[in-house]
Length: 292
Image 1 (cartoon, rainbow, N blue to C red):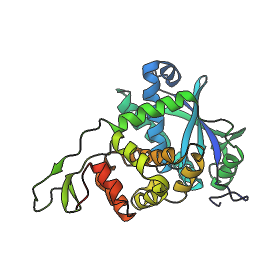
Image 2: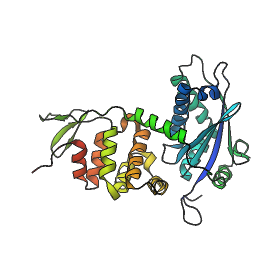
Image 3: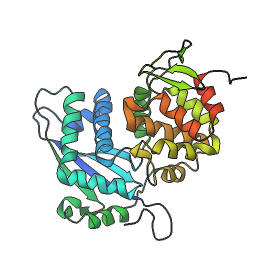
């Protein structure tokens, strides 16, 4: 199945995953209705999607709703490869395993967490035809998203993103040349900088300054980030076209951070900017003066 539809537009589809805990005393629906539990359950589901769909470039959560006794999770897919990978993970049991691992860790459960799941696209129960992945993909593609992402999901995404980005420490410049270069450092214009995870300030500086070049930087990052490979960049451009260049660039770097976790280092962004001849933006993010 192609990455684009017959009319040339990007491939898109929708599926709903219904989840119910089989562990006594653990009710996902009740937890999600609790203000504190809501974020933890959302994070469990989000991390499971990252694991099973090869990152976040190909899918997003639109809505989480009450389907008593199940918790319903509506997912939009914008990348056929990510959708196929998710279906393969679901069919093999990897989705259930990922859900169990993340739930045990984040909910601090003493026992092994087991969950009953059902996957639907419109009226089709995909669990009944998982041995025919192309048919499942067709059902998902025909079930087009009917809504934008819920405001509640927007708030949960922002909270998760701010948690992933963490605080914004000032860049640390190591003025004295060290040999060999320490593993937690990198060189830029013959200066040595401490490497660190990207911060919210980095994302904002990048989004403000990169302009129309954000796609080129995305493809440079995509050389080592699976979530930004294939049609992911074009999908981002299409999805956030109305919001403008700042939002497109912001979403690009945010997805890089979410997909790569602790490996989303400052050095990787600086290298991508250098590859795209955007050294002045790198200088701005590093807060250094360009050489004379």
